[in-house]
Image (tube, rainbow, N blue to C red; front, side, top):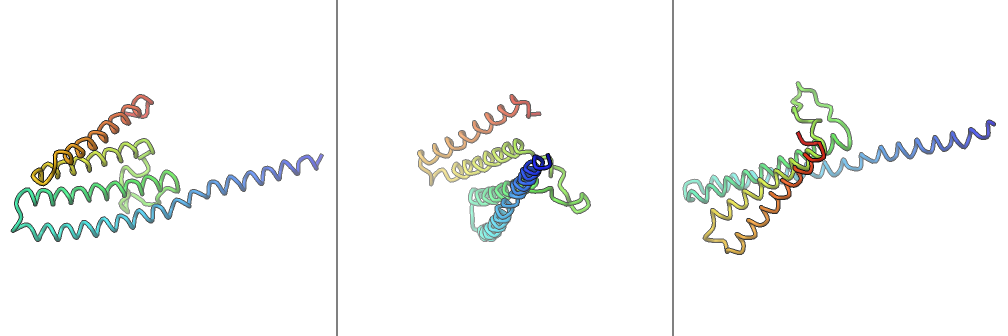
Length: 177
């Protein structure tokens, strides 16, 4: 009778080992998030270069040129926010909760953005980014072909429709507020 328990115990130990290995594999995602942080640093470097370039054009540039420069800064800022959102939400959803107290600056939304919320926020950011590119195209309309402008509008509308459909699917599935 004791012999019958041994294989069950081994299976149970093997099962626990497999489960621990699977659960521990979530840490394989950590280098991806660290890589995204390096990407964030690259966006910061690009932002600083564009600020310097914009400041160089303040006295000599026209209003539209300054506006396009500012829109480019907003575009980089939105992209940086997007990367940070993915890092925070992804790390907390798939690896481990960030151990940051409110006193240390824990953001109110941290730990509350689920995968569905993250998809909507990401798509909303992409829509905002394409809107900025569209506006930049229209501000430089004399340098754009009708075909290029049509592509900008088409791509933007594709993202808008995708965002609306995703939000609608979330609402229908009961996850929407």
